[in-house]
Image (cartoon, rainbow, N blue to C red; front, side, top):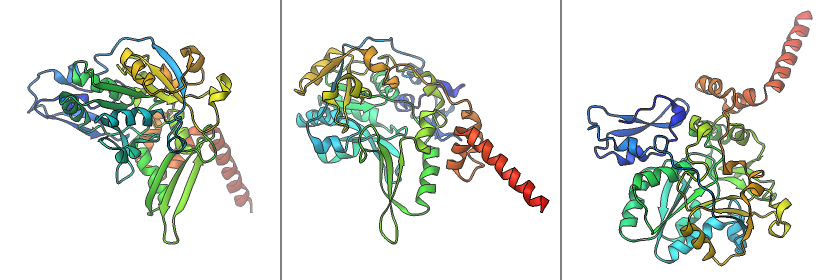
Length: 382
């Protein structure tokens, strides 16, 4: 029976929930906004399947990549709406062309992120672009297995822990499965996102969210939110150094388990790892036009062959060359020292942006507080 004694040891992959033959495990959101399994002990038959599929309890072995590449999708329109160089779209389109199925993350009607599948190019659009949230995986492992057992080619994309959860859930290798891991810094709290979005929109309806707006270029991307207003649509934009992204990159709003990720170093079982090829401007200027370049890592022969079938120009690098620019490739990140205190206050605080500011810029807040106290003293003098 799965039981989470320490939340640092649950990545929220949902493999245990989907594996339960009695369906007696639910996924509940905690006070930090992260979801964890809760077992109905009265229904549990102690079969142990939930423990057998857990990526934390059954971690893979470190793997050495076969090859590491930088590449660009030659379709400019696709690259413009993609996070990096648009390689995911090429892989996905190849699978759809042969009648396969593609799994990825999309926004739902509430602008939270869920996993889903696409059987045509129209739905594929919703999977493009980064979503800096942990997606709700739902029953997509079960759905993927059904398609695989029907003999259809399946491309399943997700974070490393989601790929690890899928592979543990399946319990065997499928030749018709292409597992694509998306390079992940860490996953921030859906609760923080929910509160942040409410503050930004101020009661207005969200029309669009773009976490990787490349209007100012790929290397200086921003995130933008468009809301419907009585006077017309309004656009809100922050640079990558804005408060929401800073909360993520400083690991203030991060899921606790991301500090000891069980899926780094190729342990997820992915065939291919995709991400942004940061640093390409120093390594090969011919592949840098500031519109986005993809990083492609192959861990299996199947993944290596699949990438080469795209017919692209692939520039090969060593892992060490790219790792210094792309820390998310290997290793985990320490949680912000104020992580627990931040979440302890979140339910009592009516403005999540100011709360993040309090812990991300303590020095500036300290100065501001000193100024306020000084003004109060001056007023009392008069």
